[in-house]
Image (cartoon, rainbow, N blue to C red; front, side):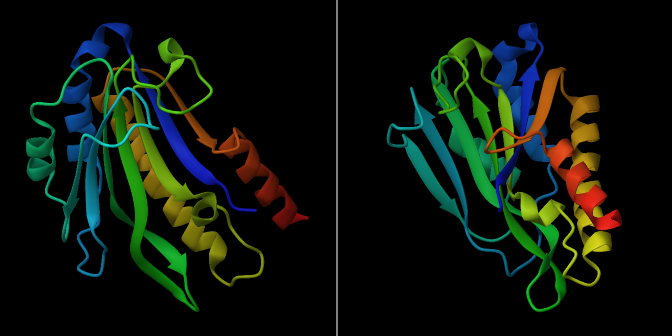
Length: 197
């Protein structure tokens, strides 16, 4: 069963007022795909809750331009505002054969009074989140030749990004988990243990 994989980041309390500045750092650090075959990206701004219609939803073609994204965010601020960028980054994927290509990813920044749809209360919600897509991109499959090596490369890309974020942002806490709430590290360990048996 596949599940969505995400990284939640809580900033140090004193840094939350500058969350848009930290979101900019995340966007500039993120290795967006530069491949021509990627689909359209979308920049969205919402107020109050994920259930509300977007204040702005702007499509962007081709490899993402961070300056263009930041330009779209200007003028939208407040503690009940959330920003998100849905785009692409390159992962090894199996489609009849292994191929390095664009995979969906979403980067988001939440104001402290924005209801991001999680079960956490407003004061406990993360400040930044990266939705990495389906966890199957990061879990080896016994039935596919080369799966161990390719998923290891995908995991290394994700971990490299996490370590770069740790050294760039004022991170108080972070959590890598699946949509069902399962700890991804535990799930990966289960898959690796079953492969060695």
